[in-house]
Each structure stands twice: as structure tokens, then as C-alpha cells.
Amino acid sequence: MNIVVLISGRGSNLQSIIDKKEEGELDITIDAVISSVPDVLGLQRAKKAGISTHVIHHEKFTGREAFDQSLQDCIDQYHPQLVVLAGFMRVLSPAFVAHYQGRLINIHPALLPKFPGLNTHRRAIEAGEKEHGVSVHFVTAEVDGGPVIAQAKVEIKADDTTDTLATRVLEQEHILYPRVLRWFCENRITLKKKEVYFDNTRLGIEGMVIN
Ligand code: NHR
Ligand code: GAR
Image (cartoon, rainbow, N blue to C red; front, side):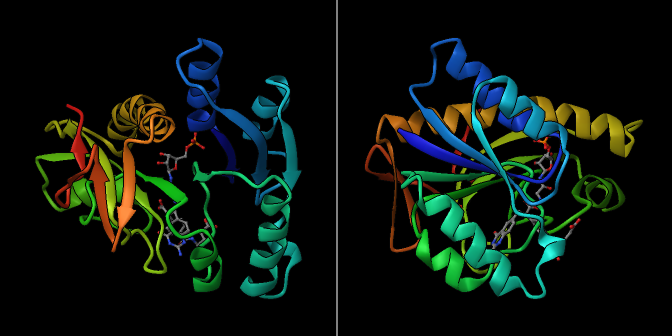
């Protein structure tokens, strides 16, 4: 399976995918890594793994449409089967999302539909949640509102800070995203009428819960 990965920063999720591929546990080709921000660590990680990189710097565009069009043109030269958002920080326009319907996924650090958007760890602690975690979902026009494919859960401890919680969630992210990609490779995941199917069984709103 050919994928293109979109990033905006550190790229630790990208690294987890590269590592599983290099361990021979993930039968994918990463055609390219595209960053919306220049000079980020994720670009170095990609180059180190011999992957083509592009920077499409969002600040250089006057509107979201122009940025999204440039991103789409860059992606489409590779004809990927799946486009993978991994710490990608720009909201994508409805036209962009429609173009990749069923083949655009994101990893979001919360148990969706709880805590869409930013600063999820702080918000989960402040809300007094007992558990938190990470979701992989299909991207739709509604930000972090697309159908969930899978989740991993993390207990929130009384002494957790945003940082300690983020660290434990990130550990789960690095397990969950490669696993979901593997399911895609095995053709086990499909999107039909806004619902996710795993081996032809329709999943609930949590998707597959791996822990
Ligand atoms: N685009 C669409 N249409 N739908 C989704 O579900 C998307 C998306 C783009 C990105 C990732 C998401 C996350 O996992 C994602 C999902 C950035 C923002 C945001 O508000 C929100 C959600 C996500 C990513 N970004 C600000 C913006 O104005 C910029 C913030 C910044 O640059 O630091 O685009 O959390
Ligand atoms: C991850 O925690 C990811 O879930 C989150 O940002 C981090 C990126 O880390 N994504 C978002 O918040 C998307 N808006 P990484 O660059 O090291 O993979």
C-alpha cells in the first residue's frame, strides 16, 4: 500500500510508522512526507529514512483554499491509496476532504467524540475525566468529527499533568497508528455511508478498542 504522510512538527507518529515498516511488520511504501511547517524534526526523520519530502508552508498562502490546492497537487503526483495525517495542524477545506473521501485518516489525542480540537490533554484533566486516550478516524469536513476507526485508552491518574498524560497517550499513539495502517493493508477497514466496517462488521462509535 502506498501512502503519503502529512505532518507539521516533531513527527514521532511518522517515526513509529517508519520503524514498523523497517522491522518488516508493515507492508507499505511511504511515497512522500509533506510538512505544513519548514525545518521541523519530522522532515529530518523522513530524510533519514530516505523518503521524499516537501514543505508547503501555510504562512506563504493568503487563503486556506490556495494552501489546500497546493497540498492536493503535491499529494496527487504520488497517487497514494491512503493519506495519513500525523500531527498535521491545519484545518482542511471541505473540497480537499471530499477529494480524498475514504482514504484520508487522522490520529487525534482524545477519545472522540470527546475533546475534538486542540489542547485535549489539559481539557480532559480539567473536566475531571477518569480516562483519556487516542482515536484514529476518517477525516470529514467536520473537524475531528469523522467516523472513528480505532481507539486506545489511557487511565488519568490523580497526579497527572498535561505532560505526563500526553506522554502516556503518545505511547499508545505509536502502537495504534501502525496497527490501523496494517489493517488497511490487509483490506480489513472500509468506509460505507459514513460508517466504518472491520472485516465486514460495522463498528460502534469507539471503533476497534485495542486495550
Ligand atoms: N481537517 C478537516 N476538515 N477535518 C478534520 O477532522 C481534520 C482536519 C485537519 C486536521 C487534525 C486535528 C487534530 O487531530 C485535523 C483533522 C488542527 C486544528 C486547528 O484548529 C484542529 C484539529 C486538528 C488539527 N488548527 C488551527 C487552524 O487554524 C491552527 C493551529 C496551529 O497552527 O497550531 O487550522 O487535532
Ligand atoms: C500527537 O499527539 C498527535 O496525536 C497530535 O499531535 C501530536 C503530534 O506528534 N495531533 C494533533 O493534535 C493534531 N491536531 P508527532 O508530530 O510527534 O507525531
